[in-house]
Length: 458
Ligand SMILES: Cc1cc2nc3c(=O)[nH]c(=O)nc-3n(C[C@H](O)[C@H](O)[C@H](O)COP(=O)(O)OP(=O)(O)OC[C@H]3O[C@@H](n4cnc5c(N)ncnc54)[C@H](O)[C@@H]3O)c2cc1C
Image (cartoon, rainbow, N blue to C red; front, side, top):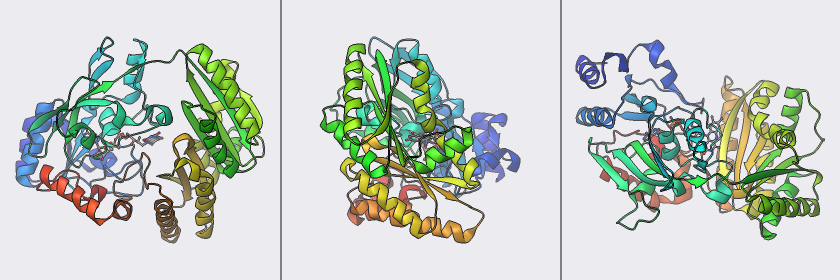
C-alpha cells in the first residue's frame, strides 16, 4: 500500500484498525461463495459513521475501490475484492442503539450480528421476522445489503419489508438518512428500499431502524415424507388452497435425507422428499391450523405424517433441515456449492424435476433444500473445486438451470443475491433496458465507480 494511503487511513481509524499483512488480510480474500478470490490493498475497521465517511471520501478522491463487508457469509462473491481496494470491515460497529417496544422499532449499527439482536429483542417479547440460516454470524448491514430472506419469508416477507430507515454514507463521503421511524411514509422516492439489496454498490449502511413484531404465542411443526419430490411440491400449493398461510414450509430431497441419515447414523424412511410445515399464531389458532395441515398432507399422498406434541418431537422434526448442509460435504467428500433460484409456487414440481435432469446431464450430484412456501429453491451442487473440468461442468449446469428458471417466470435469485456469481446472467433476466437503468442509477450515486465495483454487473 502506498505511504500516503496508509498514513491517511491510520489517522482516521488508528494504527490497530488498518490491516496490511498478508496473514491478516487473508480471511478477507474470499467469502462463503468459496469460488471467488481477490486480494485487498488493506482492510480498515471503523467504529463510527464519521470514520466511515472520512475513509470513503478519501477513497473517492484517490479513486480507490471500497468494499463494505459484514461477516462474509454471502454465497455469491459479493465481498470479494476482485479489483483490489480497501475492505471496510463493519463488524466493529456493533451497538444496538435503541429498542423501543412502544413504537415496535429498534435502531442498530450495521455490524450487529443477527442472532445477538434476536436474543436482545426476545427480552422484550419482540422479534424481527427475517431469519437467515446464517443468523449466528451474519451482520444486519449484510442482511440489509443482500435483502436476506429465510424460512419465515412466505408469511412475513423478506428484509425489504422490515426496514424503516437507514443512515448511509454515500460514495462521496456525505451522510444521508432515508425513511423515518414510522410504519408509513410517502415522502418522495423510496430510497430505503433502493439501498436494501444493493449489495454495497450504492453506499455504506452504518445504522438501520427496523420494524418489529411481538413473538407469536405458539408455534408447531408438522412433517411428512413423500415418495416423489414433485408430489411434495404440489402439496405446498394445496396447503395455500386450503386457506392456510404457514410460517414456514421447508422441503428437503433424497440427497439431503440420505446424507443426514449416514452422517448421524440414524435411519429415516427411504423416501424422495421430506416436507416440514410450521404454523404460528395464538395457541388456539395453531391447534386448528395444525389439524388442517395434517389433513391436507395426508390427502396429498404423504406418508408418515408427524405432528409435534412434545418439545422433543418439535426439535426432532427439524433435524434433517438443520443438519443437511453439514452432512452433505462430509458424506460426498466434495464441496457444497449452494445455488439459489426462485420459481412461481405452482411451478415447483416441474422445477425440481428439471433441475435434477440438468444436473444429471452434466454429471453433477445435486441435493435440494427449498424454502418451498415461497418457491425458493437451493440447489446444492457437490463439486470437487480442485478439478477444473468438473468445475466447468458445474458452471454449465448452473447457467443452464438459471436460464430455465428465467424461462418459466422465475428469478435467478430468491434471496442470496447476484454478486460476481450471477453478474453476467442478470441482464438475461431483467433485459438490457432495465440493466442500463440500473447502471445509470449506479452512476448517479457513484460516478467514479468506487463502491464495490464489479458486483451485480455494475
Ligand atoms: C450457512 C448459511 C446460511 C444462510 N442462510 C441464508 C438464508 O436463509 N437466507 C438468506 O437470504 N441468506 C442466507 N445466507 C447468505 C448470507 O448469510 C446472507 O446474505 C447475509 O445477509 C450476509 O450477511 P453478512 O454480514 O455475512 O454480509 P457479507 O457477506 O459480508 O456482505 C454481503 C453484501 O453486503 C454488503 N454489505 C455488507 N455490509 C454492508 C453495509 N454495512 N453497507 C453496505 N453494504 C454492506 C457487502 O458489500 C456485500 O455486497 C446464508 C449463508 C450461510 C453461510
